[in-house]
Each structure stands twice: as structure tokens, then as C-alpha cells.
Amino acid sequence: EFTLTELEKQIKKQPNDARYQMVMGMFLAQTGNPTPALHYLEEALVLSPRKQSILITTGDVHISLKNYDKAAELSEKAFNLAPDYFTARSFHALALLYNGEDARAHALLEDKYGQYDDFIPEDDFIWAYLARGQYEKVLAASKVKVEGNPTVIRYRLGVVTSHLKLGQ
Image 1: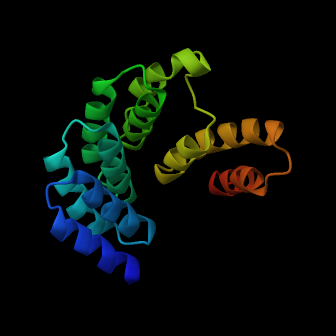
Image 2 (image 1 turned 90 degrees about the vertical axis):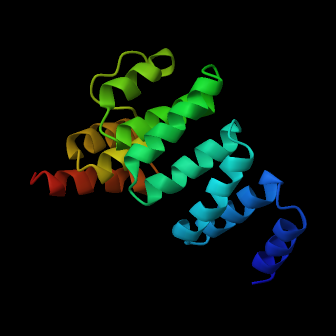
């Protein structure tokens, strides 16, 4: 409660400072309040429309709300501001993946992962495959992760869950 009160005070003191709007939006999103978070993040975008961190954070909240089209739109804006910035490139690929645009997502990351026709073996991408019910890709990516990190239980759970969902 203290944090919310202090952030509200700062927003009222400096209503044209996108930083406070963004911090409030991030705080609300991280505390399980994505819908009110969007109000502050969208206000931050009005104040600072070319700030990649605001575009990415707002897109991430849209992913959590399953607004995949909007997330892909915002991620593209962030990516186009600086295509060589890997965080923006990676987030754009992730948003495209959630939006069902696998080929475009994979093409964006070929420089890091090479030619991947089936999956991208990173945690965030595994979650996207899982959200879309692409258990074959979850299984393949989880197996790669288990090979590199055999003691990490969440990767083993990805393998087991995928086998169960696939009826194997």
C-alpha cells in the first residue's frame, strides 16, 4: 500500500514524467494486477512513445492478458526502433510466437540459434508453445534444456507434461 501511495504522489507531482507511470505499471503487473497496470503503461506510452522499455513492458502485460495481437504490434514497434538490440529482437520473436507467427519468430532469431524449423529452446519460448498447446515443441525444447541442465526440475516437468498431453 505504501508503494502505491508514494507512486501516486509522484505521478500527481510530475504527470508528464513517463518514468513514474511506467514504474507504477510495472509494480501493478508484478503484483498480479495486469489490467490496472495497462492504464499506467499506456499513459507512459503516450508520454514517451519511442521508449523501447515501455513498449516491451506493455507488450509483456498484453501477453499475460492473452492480447497477443496487441503484444505483437508493440513488440514490432520496439524492434523497429533498434533492430540490433537483442532484447527487443527476442521479445518481438516471443510476441510473434504467442501470436501464432512461428516462421517470423524463428527468422528473427536465426542469427543466434541457426535455422530452427521446429522450436526455440529458451524458457520464455517454451511457455509460448505451452500456451498454444504445441506440446511437440514443448517436448523437443524441454529435452534440449534437460540435456544442458539435468538437475533443473521444471525442464523435466516440461518433458513429462508434454508426454501426458500427447497421450504417450
